[in-house]
Image (cartoon, rainbow over all chains, first blue to last red; front, side, top):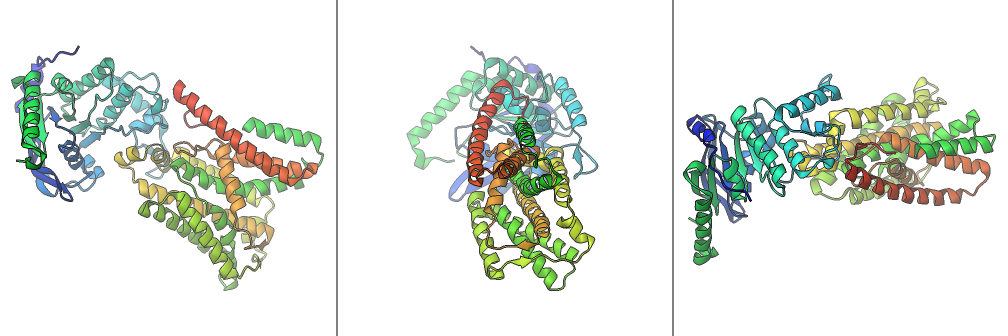
Length: 275
Length: 311
């Protein structure tokens, strides 16, 4: 049903704006398994970058390094031109990098507004004070309206929402702060119907265009990626094998590339792989 | 559950003349208070998806610490404060074993239950002891005053309610119990939250242990405190706290403990065999759990506007 369109050329125009994130030679091993073998990557301000790769190619590890969940063995990360080193998730977040994980970090039993403010709750009377639920409700309602996320009531627990609504809340939470610079989305459209997917795609486009947030999307579905990404990057066996603007390529071309790569791998055998 | 408590209260009040006397109400309250206060700690832990089987043993054991310190010449108030610290440290040990070694809290606290019981028996040589009597207001505050125990229980109810439902810590406890991975990814220090909950459980059991022991006067190491612990756990569960984590209510636990108290005291007054009380307790737990499971299914399907509250 969905046809690949690269008609979002308006988005591509921003391609030459300043870079916000640069990775140089990122390596990461788990024991004898070399998951990442020298990743170089650049992300521009307000750009939506699609990260593609087979299972175990190293995408998730790369994402975890960017979010401070894991540390690279080797390599450098530059944020707005300055070298950074993330010691924890909180540290990466303090640098303006937010993540929405595949397993959805929402708490099923907590209300939508508590989820939106999770671990950044507003209180009366200091950190140990009481929760300022009234203020959090107001801000949550306001914020979701601004984002165009239509939720009947912010009092409902997250478990009562549909998958798409939950994802929207998770994305909204990650981008809530003014100083969110980079948003990492891990399979944001997984297991989602067409209408719900459209909601999330709109949200992503709005964030990148109107708020200048740079977004990295990890996804298996190439069709989706062509709908909202400015650029697509392919990672295979821990190495970046393709990096192209969606305007310069097409879904068919990418699919052909991936299939030929796969055939090659099968032909050369798993033992010989690696670059 | 609240309705059940009211019906039982009215029933016993109407059918046995002694039920509504001040003496009897005090007896009732003395039964309810320790169970309720220990259950506040269990509610915190159950909300996290954890439990503390050693809380009853802490409740029985800690007064011996106060007594020993006092006998060694430490002023009573200081002895009580030191005992509270010891109770907190037992909580730290429980919590650290759970988060560092990744042992289930059921196993961890089963271990500390026996270990504490063993230490208590060895140290006391299985001899009873008498709680300190100084004739000062310290004792009045910590148990000897007629309403002391219930006032402490009420104060603890308010404090623990505010912590669980109105503070960041409480929200983090609910979040950790509801979705541990999600909570960790949001940056909540889940391990620290778990250790804190065990500390709260240890302190609550210690506090109410000292108060209850002071009221009674003698302390007996022959009882490992499992009865109090199981009553507390049952009160929490019957009151609507989910054993699977993510939902907890201390008010529910107080109502649960009150139902037990009314049944216990009411049965005694009516001359019903106390053994029947245990049977009713067992049935009540099963019914409450069955209703609980059904309720959470319904709320999940319907969008659960009653989210964190119980019936």
